[in-house]
Length: 154
Image (tube, rainbow, N blue to C red; front, side):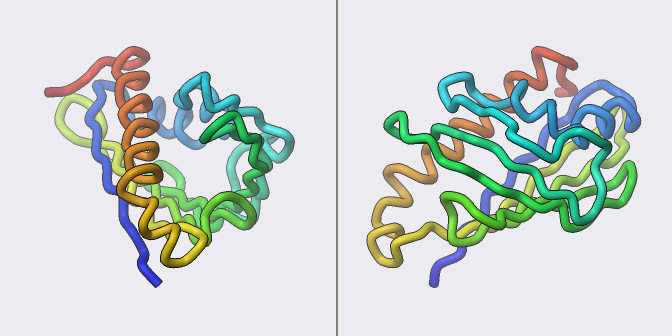
């Protein structure tokens, strides 16, 4: 059983409160997800984030195949971090930690995603050609979108 890790950091010139308000609002996921993924929230994003919150989405990650994705917000520490975990969806494991810390001139946002692809050995074979490039593309889109929205600290 191979577990992969995606790690991304980004610095933006905004306050902790503004970063938290944006990142902890599930409705903003659509803003930072590529349009071709057909991201649509079905339920669970109608109130501020809290531990135990279940959020249901539809995404179209590959070949126009719609996939239901259900995540649970498992941990929340206001203005510091939150964790979402997939309960149902395309991965065998998806554990996504979002950290925010104040730095000179703004905040640093850090994502750490531990994930496992389905289909055993076949999934592992597909990982470097399909899964990893797609995840890298999505997180690069997010990085550019956040720069567009908030600017960048170099």
